[in-house]
Image (tube, one colour):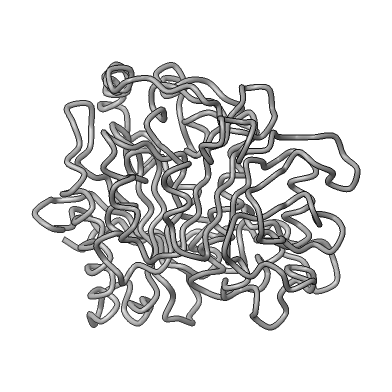
Amino acid sequence: MRGHVVQTMVVAIGVMAAGTARAQPENPGAFEVVTWDAGNVYAAGASLPTKVYYPAGGGGPFPVVGVIHGASRAGAYMRTLSETLASRGLVAVTPTIPCNFLGCNHDENAAQLSALLDWAVDQGATPGSPLEGLVDGERRGLVGHSWGALASHLAASRDDRIDAVVLLDPNDDVGVGAAATGEIRAATLQLLAERSGACNNQWMEGTVTPALPEPRLQLTIPRSAHCDPEDPTDGLCAVACGSGDRATTPFFRRYAVAWLACTLAADSEVAPWLGGSAFDDDLAAGLIGGVASAGLDLLPCRSAPGADADADADGDDDGGEEPDVAADAGADGGLDVGEETDEGADVDGAPDIAPDTAADATGDTGTTGGGGDGCGCRSAGRTGRGGWVLAAIGLAVLGSRRRRFD
């Protein structure tokens, strides 16, 4: 069944002429967006209800990105991110995967995500398909939330055709994600909620981050909790997983879109948010914290024509160790890659916004630490798997209502 196609106008908020204010990545881009309800897509033994959001008006082929929800949720909760990616020139494939309070088979979910991207590529080569001629199978990415992030992480560890991954407040499950990290070849961004709770307490970024290849970036969004990457969301998610600040939701989208548009489309417009002046501004304003990165100079958008001139003005983001963000944030706009991140130093003379994550935050573990006080560091508390099970049961109540956003 082919489903139906709906074309919608996405207003290009903030898309400015050259020389004026920058278009923030969380805002819609220049493309109108078409929504295709593809119905149930068969992928690696599962039937996945799937919507595809893609750019209208010709052009292409475009990179393809799977946009994956968390456990006991649905693709509808990732709609705004999917629409924004499509408006920026990517094909966003947004399924509802079999992962709920009864349990998630992470291996099967990972296989389903790779198969879903293959399906989209095949649709791009199928005459008469809404995606005909629009999908570039050589440029593939995944962005996932919670256990959808875990499935994305695992898929990237097993499928080297995946070029870019964004993990939105990921959660592990008895260490399967951490164990797979060494097999990943994709450029990976981790966007962590500051507040730890039952739905995100197993992710061990201190183990994962150093094992990821370059380029890599880890950020914490101050004041945020586990449900804040969703848009739209609902109140019950916060009840089950902990309450944050919904004003932080656009910042998850800002960096997710920037990473994917940079790595898959070499979009120079987003380069300032990946080690350039806009990144420094967000850091100084306390919108991001807990920074750990390496090899940002390898990102395609950083060398693309028109990229932010101060994305690496001193040319010293040359890989190796974690960056000393405070050393030159606001000075030359670069990221010195040398020691572990010390965000708490002197960003243009501003007060400290985070502890030294390598040393005094968590006792030299390499993880970010601290509390829920807006410091920009990840809350350090970890609890067992039982807390997640109770939270997932609460989320399951949403099952009969999860289609309301479709």
